[in-house]
Image (cartoon, rainbow, N blue to C red; front, side):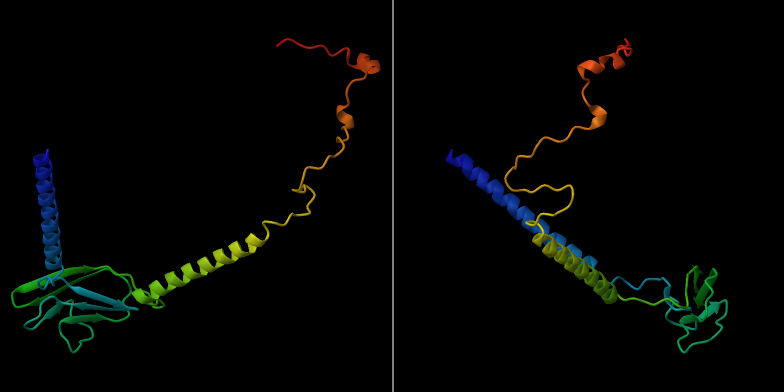
Length: 192
């Protein structure tokens, strides 16, 4: 019996050691995956209002853009389009033997405001706080009304049951009196 429990403990310790090593391995792989990737060969597109700035992935040599740059900038790796009208556009940049092409189909607007993550977070938190405040106010004011009884027409007092006289019968549903049976004598029950 003691040998069996000893074997169980050893198996359990091995399993815990395996889980610990697996956790450490996942942490190492996770941090390695988060390291900066090698420089990618993708265009960088920045949109601000109606201005679109495109950065070519080529970093060395003389860069030529197709179609040609309308307004040259100090940095020849950037292609700047001011007052962009959201129409699709084929762009390419090349330097030496390398050529990169891109299809630009971006939507821009003149009156749009850019929101950073902090502003969006602030708006959401403020909305939640206002909602929580309204809930607390409703709870506070409804708590006071629990013990009060309303004096409406259909309400009854909640105290001890009081004896009331029987309700006045409705004249439309009066019971048939003995002398009036002949009025209803012609109505016989029908079989269905």
